[in-house]
Image 1 (cartoon, one colour):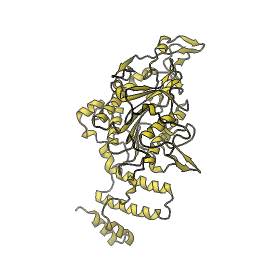
Image 2 (cartoon, helix red, strand yellow):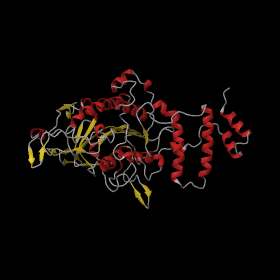
Image 3 (cartoon, one colour):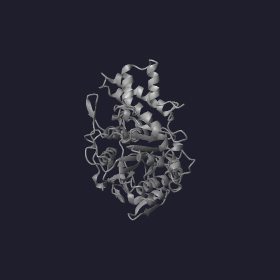
Length: 456
């Protein structure tokens, strides 16, 4: 016989297991959890262009010279000596113009080339550190040396969640990138704003299935838990970590209802799966990550980060000795990323979804000996791109010099990129602050400018 929630409450009351105050509260309101403030969104500083962000991070340092920044002079000097112990290294891939804009992209990314008129290509990015760890946390947190909240955590803190049952910040990452969980950590921000990691595979989020026999029984248990949590919180309302911890458990409970639907790709048409190049049985590739990202943002997740690769050199874009692996790595992400832009556009979501493609740094134009199949770290200049909400598509902003060694014009720092992303979300990077250890912190520290030239 099915036991209803109200019958369960009466049974517990009859056995003396419920205190009178708890009994009256549970019987007075038979709705789900009474705590509604977990969905209260923050207030944007001004009207936003973007409602959500999909942040595509390629771990390892993608070579700008071989992907998005053609250097014909470097190609012409390939393997010739620049000075003793330094030789020019051209690209192993040809560049071709794409779209009405005619932006040149290497043969590694023909599918991204097909949507280049939606893209603003930045060829003048710089980072604040030249090693993987420092550069990775630099582009995510604004600091290359200290633990700081990640950009997704700042967005969660600034805007809150649009969905009671899903976190505002979710990260889809098969492994740990350089810097590990700091990439999505909330540091001194309340723990509620830390990114929720999803691991591609048959069980993307552990313990997502309820253990209670029935949904009604689980609701009763959760309401009892909420009651005791609120009693414990009385007199401790200034403890932001306790409040955040309570809210994080409430969100986790809600995820049991919402998350399985996010990962159920059986709802997608064959045409959509074919667009991404996704085999329905594949739950591990980047195509799966991209399609899941679209399903997340359409359900109200504010900031979704997709990480390609981990800290294993054979599984990321780190190319000290093997640039030829780029053929394999590019095939894994090229079609899915282009499909994501096309999919968002076809369902009207690209107008309010910002898509960012970036990496921690580029790769240098010089090598120690001719014939070297690799490049070293290069943070002085590299390429990133943005598309979607509020971005001028079909344009190139900034440039490197003729060899891809230094910025030639319109430098864009990681703080500038962060300030621009926040601006498109309606957040002033100088006003989005959090008081910690006696001072006000912000994502961009004391730096950063909005790159208005790329805004529509």
